[in-house]
Image (cartoon, rainbow, N blue to C red; front, side):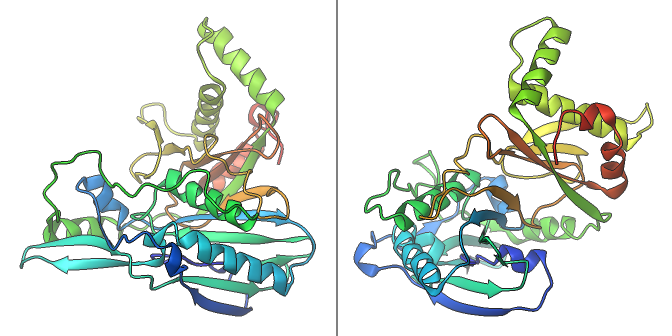
Length: 346
């Protein structure tokens, strides 16, 4: 288990409240490989500002191999340290600079303060009879989904013994060249966003639904036949199917207006159903650390809202896993919905 920055925490420590023994140390990168990046200024758009206040990106990979040994842990630590050499912001710290009485700016100080690596033992939770869960959490203002999985892909490459990364990272934060840095953020705006985040939500539950390749093909065929077209994709057919099933089982009154939207990196708690396409376009199951490909991937507790759907490619080619975060009564109703359950396996 590992925790990294600019604040990477153990995913499964957050998911479970069992007592455990753990070994924690701050890993720094190999300075011989350091590229010289020192200060990385955060971008100007308001969406980037909001990412500072969102919960971190949290993912866990289920790796299947014999019970881990000290050699296993040492290999992960060594490969992580080398990977951080290529990603200096992840071994740095978030910094706030007071520009005047009304504005501040944010940056990442690539000071090699280190990333916290935690090896936690809790029976049946972090160390399993036939493998482990490798959890990773990264501050959302430092990475989006693409760069999160890029880092994980790179770490697995180095753990397998690759000397050079197949795709080196790019640290350019904006496509525009004429930005006047540092970006001045009004303090009043930060306080407003902070107040919005204090809203209390109803208790939520999560369930993972697995859609085999054959079920997705049938949904696509049905959707295209109903629409009289051949242009509806597999993903469009699947998300439309989910939308209809969720709305049907929420038992909403007919006059109530509902919104469905697809979001790539940020969730809006004012919408009832959203799809976070964390993958299928990301290489999730190609992360072989030297012991084989993962057999499952799951999200942590961060950024959960009623109706959020996280879509992953499945372990089998062409399949898709949907991680649904909904009210308990909605999930129970969906479990009794034959039309929905006939297209999934659990």
